[in-house]
Length: 298
Image (tube, rainbow, N blue to C red):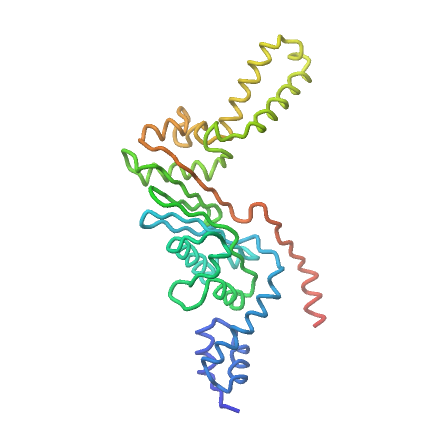
């Protein structure tokens, strides 16, 4: 058996981020061959990744890339918020955003087959390696990519990410104006960009709800239909101001709408994307007592 030194174990740990005992085991199994030991750990990591693949990953980060007229948002999930703050995890998420920016993959499946920056590994291989090193399930959930007059904004240390695209940079300070709109989107969560974007069935549903509310109110139920129609129109206007971005009161000057603020800056918004980490995903529920009991039984 090869003589495995503490220096060799430490060197393997620095290369892989894996615990000392696992590194020693890998070097013993490969008779001290450093490269084979790295491969051994990576192969072992694939098995670890498979075991963790069913574990809920609803925390994580929204990573951004905005350079050279390309804007990217990508949601990378982890199991816990603690791991989401890990520098290695954030480095991985930022690298994924760069891959998307430079290669424009059609979807997540295509993204996973692309080379990770500065390595010969694919994004999928790197993902599985990070699972081994960090010890949690990690998933790339979704991304958005735009080209042209784009701007990206991150809120709450990556909890929310916003990407906006305009048809030009307007007639003022583009970065400031674009950031202000991003902050509006992050804070107010508009469901639609324009009134025309609201589906007809949504409007009809709102009208039915409003009509029922009026008919169930003894003070309003007996009013003429013409008056009721005007009341419904007025209440629909409130729906627009709450749910449609360009109709909302501007976050920085509520005497004007977002649409008017953009017009004053010479900006025409083409599209926007808002990601909030974990939205729509089942959250992990930790049972500490059960974990302790399980650990004690091993």
